[in-house]
Image (cartoon, rainbow, N blue to C red):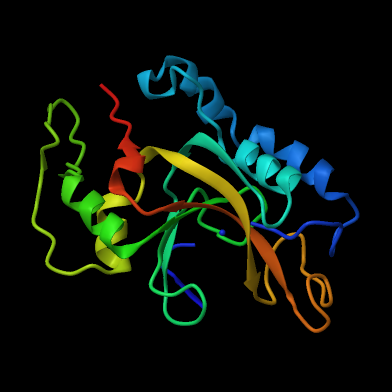
Length: 212
């Protein structure tokens, strides 16, 4: 079970949709256009970065049980925390607020890796915009007293990151998802969908992309 803070991807096949999964995946390019245009100018993407929609296509092409390596570029739009069950104590950030939408890339953090990453992160206070006045937005590093999804999103929400890892499909038992899940897709009585995951066990897998 996941506890979403802000708003992970879909199931393979034509479940609940008139279009095959390949056509759905092909339509994701438009949502990734800003990132795709940006990556050519990012030093972190000099050797190539993969957008969330491209990551979803890779994972579904590989199939369940297989993984594909790469460097993945995303903006953190949502996140959550595993409360119990087979997902253990993992934390998650997503490329979309609606984490059950096809094309979402989910980064699954092991707790020790997330703690180390958050201790690296800068905390920036946004200033109010006043006409005719120039304000400087200051950033600082703060200690981390408690590891939870709220402190995670305080430091990672809205951030642009690149993540080195392997993308794969992760089955989620749930009645939600897009395209709409159907029973008996993965098992006789199972109802759920596939998220597209990159798992992080070491904070060094993640790089913050700072804009000058």
